[in-house]
Length: 117
Image 1 (cartoon, rainbow, N blue to C red):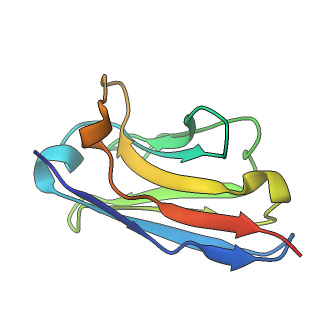
Image 2: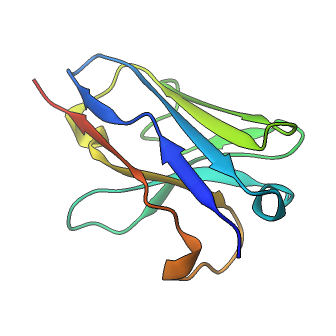
């Protein structure tokens, strides 16, 4: 069983920035694609950004141009730089593999992001 530890969330005003970090155990990080997901209250978890081992990125339309995902294949970390934050970005953010069927035990604790004035 691998381990994921997310950090960096907090309360920020609209238009502000946050940088999320995720430390993943090697057996998780060795897979090709890692991603950041988010789950807002009453909504399903959604994938907002992904990155391959080679650095190819993909973004949900709602965050494109505002969020930047990056990864360090030596440190086994994946980061999410979030700029121009909006109230609708409020959610718990998680990192995990992309392209796998994931059960509840496959997720870390997540990190809360709240965008509010």
